[in-house]
Image (cartoon, helix red, strand yellow):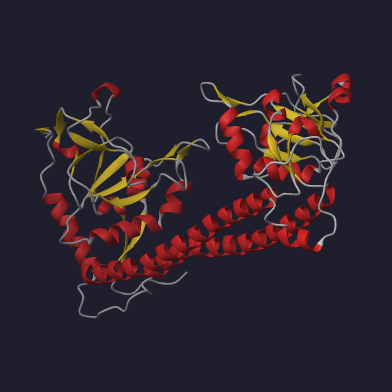
Length: 453
């Protein structure tokens, strides 16, 4: 472990500041006017809607621009963290500490960075379950940070502002690339199911006709015909409603096993009923359609490729294609912007779930080329998606490195390696003695009441 510079000291956060927890506002106290109430979501997302409070407020819970706050409760990775408030006067909600300290002795942004540098340690010691956790006041106060002279705190904070702004720029660029990849895949599917993807192939092919009992549609290429799914699918079947078990030989695929257009074979349940297994056994090439889910996820699909014997649950519809329709092409159609728009139009909404029944699924209309062209479409889409997958993997690796870069920079800063030391700076040991004396001499804070505006 690297030693700190001679002018530095190690100290506990509780030796530097006072912590004031926010007020536990009741639901009936929320208002449409008055002081905005700062909740954790307002710290992590500036676009989050505020609730307001128009009653009397203890002055301890009044927040002004520039105050340092620490969100100490919530979900690791999304909730915890230190923030300098940059909004108007506001009321502080519970689960957030207001951190009071002397500006004369401590640079605000330096202390914020010092706390965030210890965030993994704080989250690791947080109490609670896997989801909601909280850092106790005692744990937070006992957390040790590296503490430099006052002038060096300013130099460190300024340098961190510069470096971490560059990191944020990199993160934004990575995020933009990921958004472009999503758009790219949608564009590929849109081109695939409209005929644009294989225009050049058709021009070079001598086979550009297909026999179909439906009339040609002007919305697709002249060699394609518009059909209903019921015209080219053998049958539609709802899955088993029998109760599954945590162990067994034959897995029951559920809507949670459809992830990003493929089957996820983790988190399985099983059936031990021979009659159920015989009735609902899947065949390679069957498409599973998620008929019930949240509005944005209803209609997601995946192809069963015979990976292992399996049956399917009642929230899924199994579609078995005829010889006129390749499962991969149908999968593209249903996941294309055209297919997603159809699902959105025909779904029925419940309290929290949407539903698309087999009759509506069977009525889905799309342009159908002959099987030979479907095969070419599948080849080209797979090639383009493989390219996108490779790029996405590289972007994910870069994102992972960037995500670790912030902690690496912070670690370097708090080892005293980010900016040079000045021998003329007052040592941190002397500064800490002054902070201690000032805190000891300060009168104990009294509760006061302040009418909100």
